[in-house]
Length: 388
Image (cartoon, rainbow, N blue to C red; front, side, top):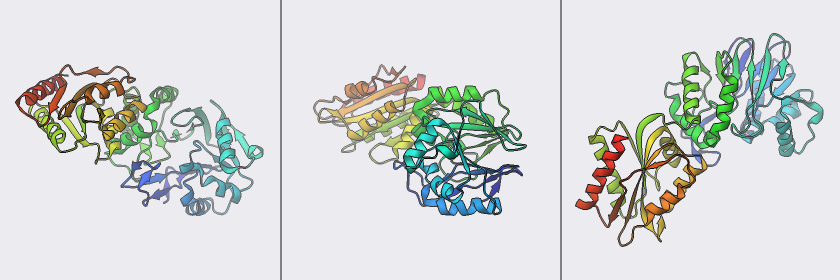
Protein backbone atom coordinates (compact mmCIF):
# COMPACT_ATOMS: atom_id res chain seq x y z
CA UNK A 1 0.00 0.00 0.00
CA UNK A 2 1.34 3.43 -0.86
CA UNK A 3 -0.08 6.76 0.23
CA UNK A 4 1.40 10.20 0.65
CA UNK A 5 0.72 11.86 3.99
CA UNK A 6 2.38 14.89 2.41
CA UNK A 7 4.97 15.52 -0.30
CA UNK A 8 7.77 14.40 2.01
CA UNK A 9 5.98 12.03 4.41
CA UNK A 10 4.96 8.73 2.85
CA UNK A 11 2.97 5.75 4.07
CA UNK A 12 4.77 2.41 3.89
CA UNK A 13 2.64 0.10 6.04
CA UNK A 14 0.80 -3.12 5.29
CA UNK A 15 -2.70 -4.49 5.81
CA UNK A 16 -3.27 -7.85 7.49
CA UNK A 17 -6.53 -9.32 6.19
CA UNK A 18 -5.76 -12.90 7.24
CA UNK A 19 -5.49 -12.42 11.01
CA UNK A 20 -8.39 -13.70 13.14
CA UNK A 21 -7.30 -12.67 16.64
CA UNK A 22 -5.11 -9.65 17.31
CA UNK A 23 -2.71 -10.30 20.18
CA UNK A 24 -4.29 -13.74 20.37
CA UNK A 25 -7.52 -12.45 21.94
CA UNK A 26 -9.23 -9.60 20.04
CA UNK A 27 -11.38 -10.65 17.04
CA UNK A 28 -10.59 -8.50 14.00
CA UNK A 29 -13.05 -9.44 11.24
CA UNK A 30 -11.90 -6.47 9.14
CA UNK A 31 -8.20 -7.14 9.75
CA UNK A 32 -5.66 -4.64 11.01
CA UNK A 33 -2.88 -2.47 9.64
CA UNK A 34 0.74 -2.27 10.72
CA UNK A 35 1.68 1.30 9.88
CA UNK A 36 5.11 2.50 8.88
CA UNK A 37 6.05 5.90 7.49
CA UNK A 38 8.99 7.48 5.68
CA UNK A 39 10.23 11.07 5.96
CA UNK A 40 12.32 12.09 2.95
CA UNK A 41 14.68 15.02 3.45
CA UNK A 42 18.41 15.69 3.38
CA UNK A 43 18.45 12.68 5.67
CA UNK A 44 15.79 10.00 5.44
CA UNK A 45 13.99 8.39 8.36
CA UNK A 46 11.81 5.30 8.31
CA UNK A 47 9.27 5.38 11.12
CA UNK A 48 8.66 1.93 12.66
CA UNK A 49 8.58 -1.54 11.15
CA UNK A 50 5.79 -4.11 10.85
CA UNK A 51 4.80 -7.60 11.95
CA UNK A 52 7.35 -10.25 11.03
CA UNK A 53 4.94 -12.09 8.71
CA UNK A 54 4.99 -9.05 6.42
CA UNK A 55 8.65 -8.07 6.82
CA UNK A 56 9.71 -8.98 3.29
CA UNK A 57 6.73 -7.30 1.63
CA UNK A 58 7.19 -4.20 3.76
CA UNK A 59 10.94 -3.98 3.08
CA UNK A 60 10.34 -4.16 -0.66
CA UNK A 61 7.87 -1.28 -0.39
CA UNK A 62 10.30 0.80 1.67
CA UNK A 63 13.06 0.23 -0.89
CA UNK A 64 10.77 1.36 -3.71
CA UNK A 65 10.08 4.60 -1.84
CA UNK A 66 13.80 5.12 -1.24
CA UNK A 67 14.75 4.69 -4.91
CA UNK A 68 17.72 2.51 -4.08
CA UNK A 69 19.21 4.72 -1.37
CA UNK A 70 19.78 3.60 2.21
CA UNK A 71 17.85 5.42 4.97
CA UNK A 72 19.83 7.30 7.58
CA UNK A 73 17.57 6.45 10.51
CA UNK A 74 15.04 3.89 11.65
CA UNK A 75 12.88 5.54 14.33
CA UNK A 76 11.26 3.00 16.66
CA UNK A 77 8.43 4.37 18.79
CA UNK A 78 7.21 1.04 20.15
CA UNK A 79 9.02 -2.28 20.43
CA UNK A 80 6.04 -4.64 20.54
CA UNK A 81 6.58 -7.49 18.03
CA UNK A 82 3.65 -6.53 15.80
CA UNK A 83 5.82 -3.52 14.89
CA UNK A 84 9.37 -4.52 15.71
CA UNK A 85 9.56 -8.06 14.34
CA UNK A 86 10.25 -6.70 10.84
CA UNK A 87 13.01 -4.53 12.26
CA UNK A 88 15.62 -7.31 12.26
CA UNK A 89 15.39 -7.87 8.51
CA UNK A 90 15.55 -4.11 7.94
CA UNK A 91 18.65 -3.65 10.09
CA UNK A 92 20.40 -6.57 8.40
CA UNK A 93 19.60 -5.14 4.96
CA UNK A 94 20.73 -1.62 5.90
CA UNK A 95 23.75 -2.15 8.20
CA UNK A 96 24.69 1.55 8.22
CA UNK A 97 21.25 2.81 9.23
CA UNK A 98 21.06 4.14 12.80
CA UNK A 99 18.25 2.98 15.07
CA UNK A 100 16.60 5.82 17.01
CA UNK A 101 14.75 4.82 20.16
CA UNK A 102 14.72 5.31 23.91
CA UNK A 103 16.95 3.54 26.43
CA UNK A 104 14.26 1.01 27.30
CA UNK A 105 13.46 0.47 23.64
CA UNK A 106 17.11 -0.34 22.94
CA UNK A 107 17.18 -2.89 25.76
CA UNK A 108 14.02 -4.51 24.42
CA UNK A 109 15.44 -4.66 20.89
CA UNK A 110 18.55 -6.38 22.16
CA UNK A 111 16.42 -8.83 24.16
CA UNK A 112 14.32 -9.60 21.08
CA UNK A 113 17.10 -9.93 18.53
CA UNK A 114 19.93 -11.17 20.78
CA UNK A 115 22.26 -8.60 19.23
CA UNK A 116 24.29 -5.75 20.62
CA UNK A 117 22.82 -2.73 18.84
CA UNK A 118 24.40 -0.06 21.05
CA UNK A 119 27.01 0.82 18.42
CA UNK A 120 24.39 1.87 15.90
CA UNK A 121 21.81 3.34 18.29
CA UNK A 122 20.79 6.95 18.78
CA UNK A 123 19.18 6.96 22.20
CA UNK A 124 16.67 9.78 22.70
CA UNK A 125 14.75 10.99 25.72
CA UNK A 126 11.98 13.45 26.54
CA UNK A 127 12.39 16.70 24.59
CA UNK A 128 15.26 15.54 22.37
CA UNK A 129 15.14 16.44 18.68
CA UNK A 130 16.38 14.82 15.49
CA UNK A 131 16.98 17.16 12.55
CA UNK A 132 16.64 15.62 9.09
CA UNK A 133 17.02 18.88 7.15
CA UNK A 134 13.84 20.91 6.87
CA UNK A 135 12.05 18.34 9.04
CA UNK A 136 12.73 18.01 12.77
CA UNK A 137 11.36 15.35 15.07
CA UNK A 138 10.77 16.17 18.73
CA UNK A 139 10.35 13.20 21.09
CA UNK A 140 8.02 12.73 24.03
CA UNK A 141 7.97 9.82 26.44
CA UNK A 142 4.68 7.91 26.59
CA UNK A 143 5.41 5.20 29.16
CA UNK A 144 2.66 2.57 29.57
CA UNK A 145 0.72 3.79 26.56
CA UNK A 146 0.73 0.86 26.55
CA UNK A 147 4.30 -0.49 27.07
CA UNK A 148 6.97 1.15 29.24
CA UNK A 149 9.35 2.09 26.40
CA UNK A 150 6.86 3.94 24.19
CA UNK A 151 7.83 7.21 22.54
CA UNK A 152 5.81 9.52 20.34
CA UNK A 153 7.35 12.10 18.03
CA UNK A 154 6.18 15.39 16.58
CA UNK A 155 7.46 16.60 13.22
CA UNK A 156 7.69 20.35 13.71
CA UNK A 157 7.60 21.69 10.15
CA UNK A 158 4.51 19.79 8.97
CA UNK A 159 2.96 19.44 12.44
CA UNK A 160 2.56 15.68 12.20
CA UNK A 161 2.27 13.54 15.33
CA UNK A 162 3.58 9.97 15.15
CA UNK A 163 1.53 8.60 18.02
CA UNK A 164 2.67 4.95 18.38
CA UNK A 165 -0.30 2.82 19.54
CA UNK A 166 -2.24 5.85 20.77
CA UNK A 167 -5.19 6.74 18.49
CA UNK A 168 -4.93 3.34 16.84
CA UNK A 169 -7.88 1.30 15.62
CA UNK A 170 -8.74 -2.18 14.45
CA UNK A 171 -9.71 -2.48 10.79
CA UNK A 172 -8.39 -1.02 7.52
CA UNK A 173 -6.31 2.05 6.82
CA UNK A 174 -9.14 4.00 5.18
CA UNK A 175 -10.84 6.62 7.33
CA UNK A 176 -14.54 6.30 8.05
CA UNK A 177 -16.79 8.32 10.31
CA UNK A 178 -17.40 5.31 12.57
CA UNK A 179 -13.79 5.54 13.75
CA UNK A 180 -14.86 5.56 17.39
CA UNK A 181 -16.39 2.08 17.37
CA UNK A 182 -13.30 0.00 16.61
CA UNK A 183 -11.02 2.63 18.16
CA UNK A 184 -12.90 2.26 21.45
CA UNK A 185 -12.70 -1.53 21.40
CA UNK A 186 -8.99 -1.22 20.66
CA UNK A 187 -8.46 1.41 23.36
CA UNK A 188 -10.32 -0.27 26.20
CA UNK A 189 -8.88 -3.69 25.46
CA UNK A 190 -5.27 -2.69 24.97
CA UNK A 191 -4.62 0.74 26.46
CA UNK A 192 -7.58 1.22 28.79
CA UNK A 193 -5.94 0.16 32.03
CA UNK A 194 -3.49 3.04 31.74
CA UNK A 195 -5.80 6.04 31.84
CA UNK A 196 -3.48 8.04 34.10
CA UNK A 197 -0.61 7.59 31.66
CA UNK A 198 -2.81 8.53 28.68
CA UNK A 199 -3.86 11.67 30.52
CA UNK A 200 -0.19 12.53 31.10
CA UNK A 201 0.53 12.13 27.39
CA UNK A 202 -2.46 14.25 26.38
CA UNK A 203 -1.21 16.98 28.71
CA UNK A 204 2.22 16.91 27.03
CA UNK A 205 0.66 17.20 23.60
CA UNK A 206 -1.95 19.82 24.49
CA UNK A 207 0.20 22.79 23.43
CA UNK A 208 1.04 21.40 20.00
CA UNK A 209 -0.63 22.42 16.76
CA UNK A 210 -1.34 19.09 15.07
CA UNK A 211 -2.24 18.77 11.39
CA UNK A 212 -2.18 14.97 11.22
CA UNK A 213 -1.96 12.05 13.64
CA UNK A 214 -0.15 8.97 12.30
CA UNK A 215 -0.79 5.96 14.56
CA UNK A 216 0.69 2.48 14.25
CA UNK A 217 -2.72 0.90 13.54
CA UNK A 218 -5.64 2.22 11.53
CA UNK A 219 -6.14 5.45 9.57
CA UNK A 220 -4.25 8.72 9.67
CA UNK A 221 -6.39 11.32 11.45
CA UNK A 222 -6.65 14.81 9.96
CA UNK A 223 -8.76 17.96 9.98
CA UNK A 224 -11.73 18.29 12.32
CA UNK A 225 -11.44 14.62 13.27
CA UNK A 226 -8.30 15.32 15.34
CA UNK A 227 -10.18 17.33 17.97
CA UNK A 228 -12.99 14.75 18.00
CA UNK A 229 -10.59 11.84 18.54
CA UNK A 230 -8.54 13.67 21.15
CA UNK A 231 -11.77 14.53 22.96
CA UNK A 232 -12.79 10.88 23.03
CA UNK A 233 -9.36 9.85 24.30
CA UNK A 234 -9.63 12.44 27.03
CA UNK A 235 -13.04 11.11 28.07
CA UNK A 236 -12.03 7.44 27.84
CA UNK A 237 -8.81 7.93 29.79
CA UNK A 238 -10.69 9.87 32.48
CA UNK A 239 -13.06 6.86 32.81
CA UNK A 240 -16.01 9.13 32.22
CA UNK A 241 -19.02 7.55 30.45
CA UNK A 242 -19.30 8.54 26.83
CA UNK A 243 -23.07 8.05 26.72
CA UNK A 244 -26.20 7.49 28.78
CA UNK A 245 -26.48 3.79 28.05
CA UNK A 246 -27.10 0.42 29.68
CA UNK A 247 -25.09 -2.70 28.98
CA UNK A 248 -26.79 -5.93 30.08
CA UNK A 249 -24.21 -8.70 30.31
CA UNK A 250 -25.50 -12.14 31.19
CA UNK A 251 -24.99 -15.87 30.99
CA UNK A 252 -27.71 -18.50 31.16
CA UNK A 253 -27.80 -22.26 31.70
CA UNK A 254 -31.37 -23.24 30.74
CA UNK A 255 -32.65 -19.94 29.39
CA UNK A 256 -34.36 -18.37 32.41
CA UNK A 257 -31.61 -15.79 33.05
CA UNK A 258 -31.50 -14.99 29.35
CA UNK A 259 -35.27 -14.41 29.37
CA UNK A 260 -34.93 -12.07 32.35
CA UNK A 261 -32.10 -10.10 30.69
CA UNK A 262 -34.15 -9.69 27.51
CA UNK A 263 -37.22 -8.69 29.51
CA UNK A 264 -35.21 -6.03 31.30
CA UNK A 265 -33.96 -4.69 27.96
CA UNK A 266 -37.56 -4.42 26.69
CA UNK A 267 -38.62 -2.68 29.91
CA UNK A 268 -35.79 -0.16 29.63
CA UNK A 269 -36.68 0.58 26.02
CA UNK A 270 -40.33 1.12 26.94
CA UNK A 271 -39.27 3.58 29.64
CA UNK A 272 -37.18 5.66 27.21
CA UNK A 273 -33.65 4.46 27.93
CA UNK A 274 -31.75 5.68 24.81
CA UNK A 275 -28.96 3.11 24.38
CA UNK A 276 -29.26 -0.56 25.39
CA UNK A 277 -26.84 -3.36 24.53
CA UNK A 278 -27.34 -7.01 25.53
CA UNK A 279 -24.46 -9.51 25.54
CA UNK A 280 -24.51 -13.26 26.10
CA UNK A 281 -21.09 -13.59 27.67
CA UNK A 282 -20.81 -17.27 26.83
CA UNK A 283 -21.36 -16.65 23.10
CA UNK A 284 -20.83 -13.02 22.12
CA UNK A 285 -17.55 -11.18 21.60
CA UNK A 286 -16.59 -10.18 25.13
CA UNK A 287 -14.22 -7.50 23.82
CA UNK A 288 -17.32 -5.72 22.50
CA UNK A 289 -19.02 -6.23 25.85
CA UNK A 290 -15.96 -4.70 27.54
CA UNK A 291 -16.05 -1.74 25.16
CA UNK A 292 -19.77 -1.26 25.80
CA UNK A 293 -19.35 -1.26 29.58
CA UNK A 294 -16.70 1.46 29.40
CA UNK A 295 -18.54 3.64 26.90
CA UNK A 296 -21.91 3.44 28.71
CA UNK A 297 -22.84 4.83 32.10
CA UNK A 298 -24.71 1.79 33.47
CA UNK A 299 -24.06 -1.94 33.65
CA UNK A 300 -26.33 -4.83 34.54
CA UNK A 301 -24.70 -8.16 35.39
CA UNK A 302 -26.96 -11.20 35.37
CA UNK A 303 -25.68 -14.60 36.43
CA UNK A 304 -27.06 -17.95 37.51
CA UNK A 305 -25.46 -19.57 40.54
CA UNK A 306 -23.06 -22.39 39.67
CA UNK A 307 -21.48 -24.35 42.52
CA UNK A 308 -22.29 -21.50 44.88
CA UNK A 309 -20.45 -19.06 42.64
CA UNK A 310 -20.81 -16.92 39.52
CA UNK A 311 -21.20 -18.47 36.08
CA UNK A 312 -17.61 -18.78 34.71
CA UNK A 313 -18.15 -16.53 31.67
CA UNK A 314 -19.58 -13.78 33.90
CA UNK A 315 -16.75 -14.18 36.39
CA UNK A 316 -14.17 -13.88 33.60
CA UNK A 317 -15.89 -10.77 32.27
CA UNK A 318 -15.95 -9.06 35.66
CA UNK A 319 -12.30 -9.89 36.20
CA UNK A 320 -11.53 -8.40 32.79
CA UNK A 321 -13.40 -5.23 33.73
CA UNK A 322 -11.47 -4.96 36.98
CA UNK A 323 -8.15 -5.61 35.22
CA UNK A 324 -8.87 -2.66 32.91
CA UNK A 325 -9.66 -0.23 35.76
CA UNK A 326 -13.44 -0.21 35.41
CA UNK A 327 -14.80 2.65 37.54
CA UNK A 328 -17.26 5.55 37.90
CA UNK A 329 -20.30 3.57 36.81
CA UNK A 330 -23.75 2.52 38.08
CA UNK A 331 -24.10 -1.25 38.43
CA UNK A 332 -27.20 -3.39 38.90
CA UNK A 333 -27.13 -7.11 39.72
CA UNK A 334 -29.41 -10.00 38.84
CA UNK A 335 -28.93 -13.44 40.38
CA UNK A 336 -30.76 -16.67 39.70
CA UNK A 337 -30.91 -20.19 41.01
CA UNK A 338 -33.40 -22.93 41.74
CA UNK A 339 -32.75 -23.31 45.47
CA UNK A 340 -30.08 -20.89 46.78
CA UNK A 341 -29.10 -17.97 44.51
CA UNK A 342 -25.71 -16.60 45.63
CA UNK A 343 -24.17 -15.00 42.54
CA UNK A 344 -25.03 -11.36 43.38
CA UNK A 345 -22.82 -11.34 46.46
CA UNK A 346 -19.95 -12.90 44.54
CA UNK A 347 -20.32 -10.45 41.64
CA UNK A 348 -20.15 -7.55 44.10
CA UNK A 349 -17.06 -9.06 45.69
CA UNK A 350 -15.37 -9.44 42.31
CA UNK A 351 -16.06 -5.76 41.64
CA UNK A 352 -14.76 -4.79 45.07
CA UNK A 353 -11.48 -3.37 43.79
CA UNK A 354 -13.15 -1.09 41.24
CA UNK A 355 -13.30 2.59 42.15
CA UNK A 356 -16.40 4.76 42.48
CA UNK A 357 -19.04 2.19 41.58
CA UNK A 358 -22.59 2.84 42.72
CA UNK A 359 -24.78 -0.24 43.10
CA UNK A 360 -28.49 -0.25 42.45
CA UNK A 361 -30.70 -0.40 45.53
CA UNK A 362 -32.96 -2.89 43.76
CA UNK A 363 -31.13 -6.13 42.94
CA UNK A 364 -33.16 -8.93 41.39
CA UNK A 365 -33.28 -12.46 42.80
CA UNK A 366 -34.98 -15.12 40.72
CA UNK A 367 -35.86 -18.59 41.96
CA UNK A 368 -36.49 -20.90 39.05
CA UNK A 369 -38.27 -18.87 36.36
CA UNK A 370 -39.60 -15.33 36.08
CA UNK A 371 -42.89 -14.83 37.91
CA UNK A 372 -44.99 -11.93 39.19
CA UNK A 373 -42.72 -11.28 42.18
CA UNK A 374 -39.55 -11.34 40.06
CA UNK A 375 -41.10 -9.05 37.46
CA UNK A 376 -41.98 -6.57 40.21
CA UNK A 377 -38.31 -6.53 41.24
CA UNK A 378 -37.30 -6.11 37.61
CA UNK A 379 -39.68 -3.16 37.22
CA UNK A 380 -38.09 -1.41 40.20
CA UNK A 381 -34.61 -2.07 38.86
CA UNK A 382 -35.58 -0.72 35.43
CA UNK A 383 -36.99 2.46 36.99
CA UNK A 384 -33.79 2.96 38.97
CA UNK A 385 -31.62 2.45 35.90
CA UNK A 386 -33.59 4.89 33.77
CA UNK A 387 -33.60 7.53 36.53
CA UNK A 388 -29.81 7.57 36.78
